[in-house]
Image 1 (cartoon, helix red, strand yellow):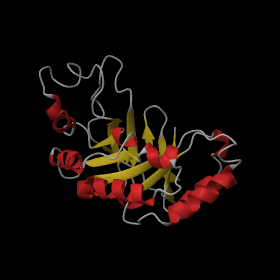
Image 2 (tube, rainbow, N blue to C red):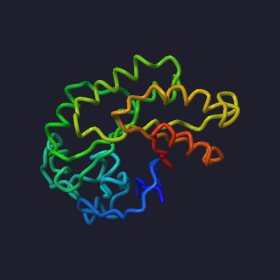
Image 3 (cartoon, rainbow, N blue to C red):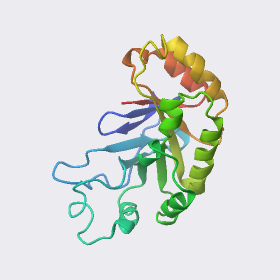
Image 4 (tube, rainbow, N blue to C red):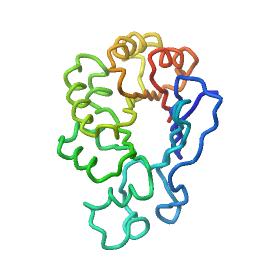
Length: 219
């Protein structure tokens, strides 16, 4: 059985190595946000050697969190430190829009305890505008910036949009672009791929990702 990372609204990171070990819950899953609970959460089931489930949310702030999750009067600058007292991981969405300033990333590091993890989306410049083509420098800048997190850097997500046939005629066509890029990914980091073309979610895609040590993220 594959290990998996699941978000509450259906995002599932399926790791490439098979595992027969059961996981254990880590963190405080009883924490809720707002009247209807955590709306954008995810859980991570790690690899066989460290079987555990980490609970966190997509972003660490949103409308309605002040006064429901965060205490009234808490400064926004202190949100992440407070969040890290209750969760062990967070997904950073803002990186999808642009690579952050390295000083911002260093501040994330300084505000969280040892063992905390950050997942982050690869910028849309790479996944949507250039679609992995002629983007080596942009990716290098992003990766170097995120490495300021040190051991707290978790999986980096390539979240692609839904492709039409003017971009890629088939999964094989897409893999012709994806595979050469995957081969160049640094082995010391973790990566995941999410695609919106549901008819491409077939064993062939999973096999290719597994071969390159990359997780599959399902929306």
